[in-house]
Image 1 (spheres, rainbow, N blue to C red):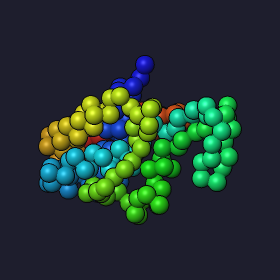
Image 2: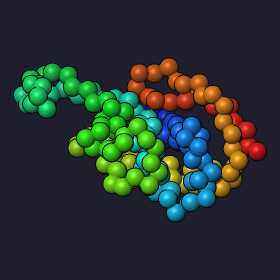
Image 3: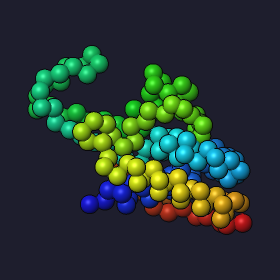
Image 4: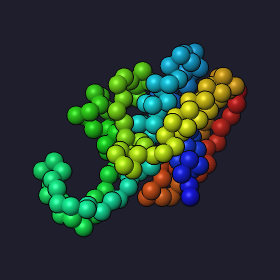
Amino acid sequence: MIAGNETTRNAVSGAVVALHEHDRWRWLGEHPEHLTTAAEELLRYVSPVQHFRRTATRDTVLGDQHVRAGDKVVIWFGAANRDPAVFPDPHRLDLQREPNPHVAFGVGPHFCLGAHLARLETAEMLRRLVAAAPALEVGEPVRVASNFINGIAHLPARVG
């Protein structure tokens, strides 16, 4: 019911906060040629969906963990998207990171059907925001109280 609404909205607001926390807002406005890679990196860095739980349909091994059919398995997207075995310097916001094999949209048969649209919406919203408000200032975000969505409920902003 909320796919493509709450997730993309929180990806964009989380991206605005991350860009300001890392002093990259003006840089992105001055380098719009990097919007595609920047959007991918912001999706990785923000990870608007925190986790998904699935039920194992057969016995398997994940890493060194034995999983039995019927066991519940949870992927924590933020942890997967900061895996140092996959991402060099995983806690750094690198708007030119390539390759960027993040899992913000899930993996396998549960990959988000709207991923292409969400990528386009995220990049285009950021393109328009940095162009329209190059001197945007943001205050302290109020986060959504949720164990599912990494979201922002309120973000004071000043267009300067």
